[in-house]
Amino acid sequence: MLQGRHALAGWVPARFGQVDGEARTEDPVKKAAAALEGLLSERDPDAPVAVLGAGIDDLTAGRKYLATLAPGGFMVPTWPSEYGGMGVDKDGAQAVKAALSRFEAPDLYPWMVGIDLVGPTILVHGSDEQKLRWLAAIANGTEIWCQLFSEPNAGSDLAGLSARARRDGEGWRVTGSKVWTSRAHYSKWGLLLARYDSSLPKHRGIVAFGLDLTAPGVTVKPLVQMNKDAHFNEVFLDDVWIADSDRIDEPGQGWAVALTCLSFERGSLGGGLGVRRDQVLRLASMIPADDAVRRDAWVRDMAKFETIRMTDERTKASAKAGKAPGPEGSGSKLRGTALIKSLADLAMQVEGPAAAAYSGETDDWVKMFLVSPSLSIRGGTDEIQRNILAERVLGLPPEPRVDKLKAFSETPGAATAG
Ligand SMILES: Cc1cc2nc3c(=O)[nH]c(=O)nc-3n(C[C@H](O)[C@H](O)[C@H](O)COP(=O)(O)OP(=O)(O)OC[C@H]3O[C@@H](n4cnc5c(N)ncnc54)[C@H](O)[C@@H]3O)c2cc1C
Picture 1 (spheres, protein in one colour):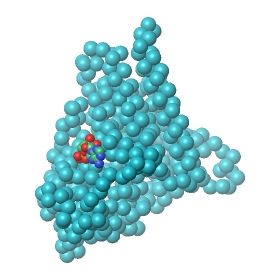
Picture 2 (picture 1 turned 180 degrees about the vertical axis):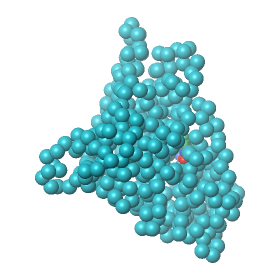
Picture 3 (picture 1 turned 120 degrees about the vertical axis):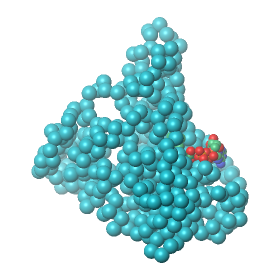
Picture 4 (picture 1 turned 60 degrees about the vertical axis):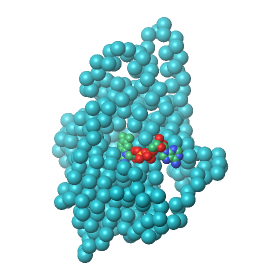
C-alpha cells in the first residue's frame, strides 16, 4: 500500500491558502489527491470503518501510514512546516482532508490525542524548543501522547484535581493518580495536569507538563471495558521527576492549557461522532421492506443525521468567518451522542440474535452499540453539556460554585484528596 517518498517531489503544499493566481485556478482537492496517488491505495467503499477506537490497535500499520504522510505534512496541514505540517490555512486543510478520504487508511485512534488535541495545544502554549522537540514526532507517528487529566475525584470538576507537583532543583516531583487515561499503555508522553499551590483557588494553582511515561515512578494499569477492549488505564505517579524544560506554559497557566486542550477535544468530538453517511444508508438496506416501524425509525434518524450535518456546516462557516466557538459544540455533541445510540439500537433490533454472536472483529454496529454509552461521558458528560446550554443559551441561573474563589486547601475537594 505504501511506497517511497519521491512521489512528493515537485508538489508544493504551501500553495494552499495562498492567493496567487495559479493556486486559485487549480482544484486543491484534485491537487492534493494527485500528490497522494502512488503513496496510498484507493479506499474500498465497502471496507469496515474504524469505530471510535473499538478493537485492537494496529500500531505498525498506523506508524507506517503516518511515516508515509509525514514528509508532505499531510496529516497536520495547518501546522507550520518546521513542526511537521504544511503551513496552510483552513481551506487548504479541508482540501487535504477531502483528498485523504479517498484513500485507504488504518485506524489512527492511537494517535488522535497527539494529533488533534495535544499538538494544537502545544502550538498555543509550548515554547519554541518544545514545539521543535515534540510536534514533528507527533505528526510522523513515532511518539504517541495521552491526556492525563481525570482523577478518581476529579472528572466533571476537573479543576478539583489533586495530583501534587513540588519544585525540586531544575525540575519537579509529582505524586498522584490519574484514571480513564486512554492509550497510556502505549504512549510515550502524557499531557499532565498537577496542583503546585493549594493556597490558590482551584483553577489558579495548576501547572501543566509533558510527562515521559517511561520515567521511574510511573505505573500504568489497563482497565478492561464492557466491549472487552482495554483502551484506558489507571496511571499512578510516585514521586516522578520531571525536568522544568517539560513544563508547558507558566505555573498557574495549567487551567488555561487544559481549556485549550478541551476546546480542541470538543471540536474533534462534535458532528456525527464518527458515523458515516454511507454506514447509515447501508443500515436502511438491512431493514426488511415490510418492517414499517423500523423503516420509520430509520427515516427519523436519517433526518437527524442531516440536521446535525447541516448545523455543523453552519458552525464551520461561522468559525471560518472568524467567530469564536460558542455553546453550539455542546448541542452538537448531545445530538450526535443521542443519534449514535439510536442508530446502534436500531441496528441491534434489525440484526436480532445474530448480534449476540459478536466476535469483536467484524460488525461495526455491534461495536458502535457497545461503545455508544461512553459517548455520554467522554469529553464532558451529557449533564455537563446540558448545564452549558442552560447557562449560556437559555440564560438560566448558574450552578452555585462556592469553592471558586477559596484556597483549594480550604475546599471539600482538598479534604477528599488522597
Ligand atoms: C471512553 C472514555 C475515554 C476517556 N479518556 C480520558 C482520557 O484519555 N484522559 C482523561 O483525563 N480522561 C478521560 N476520560 C474521563 C472523562 O473525561 C470523565 O469520565 C468525565 O469527565 C466524567 O468524569 P467522571 O467519570 O469523574 O464522572 P463525575 O464527574 O464523577 O460524574 C458522575 C455523574 O455526575 C454527573 N455530574 C457531575 N457533575 C455534575 C453537575 N455539575 N451537574 C449535573 N450533573 C453532574 C455526571 O454527568 C455523571 O453522570 C475518558 C472517559 C471515557 C468514558
